[in-house]
View (tube, rainbow, N blue to C red):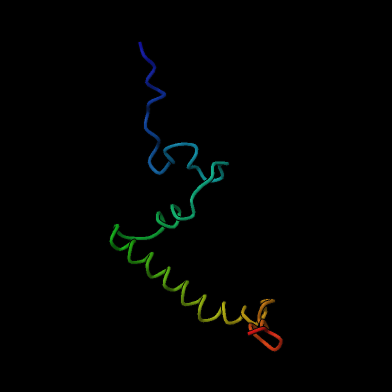
Length: 86
């Protein structure tokens, strides 16, 4: 006699392994989480990921970087000013 209890399938909706359970100590991928949360098939998910990346780039270059630029310590750097040999 063999014990088949170790090879039974998990209940519907249950994680396949303990590593994928919410609250487990196993590291998870942000990209894997995002991919699993996006609706639709592969083609729609690819389009949505590209739109998300484009939106992040627009926000960074439109608002974040211009706000951050005057706060950086190397704003007033002069190259080749008075006293430079040449």
